[in-house]
Length: 476
Ligand SMILES: Nc1ncnc2c1ncn2[C@@H]1O[C@H](COP(=O)(O)OP(=O)(O)OP(=O)(O)O)[C@@H](O)[C@H]1O
Ligand SMILES: [Mg+2]
Image 1 (cartoon, protein in one colour):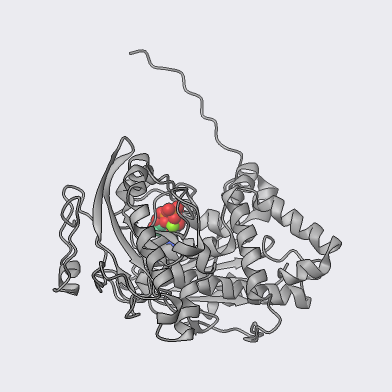
Image 2 (image 1 turned 180 degrees about the vertical axis):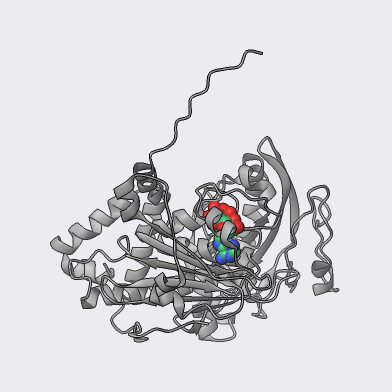
């Protein structure tokens, strides 16, 4: 075959990096993507600090994982960094660290120490102002005396990684960045992050992931609590029959594990606090539907993926749907890992089951008691990744409840926070009300979903000048 003439066309750094800031992350998803890396690096603690200081505000995420040596750290800054992934890993694209960070800030510093004897502290910095000046894919290697103050205090002598975001241009856009509104916004941001991480990493925090120690996450020094969408500790939660569905598509084959639950009628919760917590970040109606997990990490929470409409009468139905990265292409997992698309054949299989789950949920909603025909199975499955060849049996599932009658119907079950001062105050009295917060989150999520985050930023800014009270209510 004739040798073809090839011409290298290297992307322009300035414009490419500027575009890559808009991959659809909002703050919560961006932080979660950084925490994904910590989880992949075997971390058992992740400490997040959101620090208000006007234009000098910063966000720091530090972990006690196995860290990186000098070469690995440099490679970590490469868009499309090169790596082999295991079948259970959260990473996939080699983009997250850079794209999540720059979606929120203009300067990201990463300091890391590997877990090898005598490992030294390594530090690199990506500065968008510098890239704008030189229009070249350059990062800085920082000497110890060049480290920004917030990272100095965060790493001790052990292995681990600290990611620091400075110049938060996408978060703090107030004309007066030192003003009260800017401060309140960062307080609300910290709360959003707390709530989001408690949801997406709830299995890791609760120690439900086989082969891993529980993950401890703090936000501004407070422990993030795991939020279990299925209220499995409530005596009146009903676990319906679990099953495994085999997905075979031209984009990949794998197993999807289904665990449907019907939550208790509101009168049957153990306490009003438990009932309130169960409603979730988006409220009862919008938290019904599918909870889609990728490698144990929640990607999508609530909604029926267009298989039915959201309905007050079925709000007690929540269905866990788990897959592993072997089905990433089939689910269309994107860089921000904030949503997925159900593979067509899975949609078909689910559409025949949704009416059954809805019926049970409807009965529970109307009768205020458990329907007699449904055995109150109380299993707490611990998801396990399938092996590449054949799905492995998960012993934890079988052992968790020896009396459980339900069996899969399709096929056998396969397998330190350094709190620098001045701190963001703990008081939340002036933070937007819950409804307003939800409205803002919904707008932000919709904007992220449609890739219109920048448009929403402009809308928020216009709203501030036209309808300051409304903007204030929304926390903008
Ligand atoms: N906290 C960390 N501890 C150890 N290694 C890390 C950490 N963060 C990043 N890395 C290394 O840097 C690499 C690049 O991270 P990045 O998030 O950009 O991509 P990824 O995790 O491989 O894929 P994805 O784009 O899906 O997140 C990782 O694969 C990992 O090797
Ligand atoms: Mg990553």
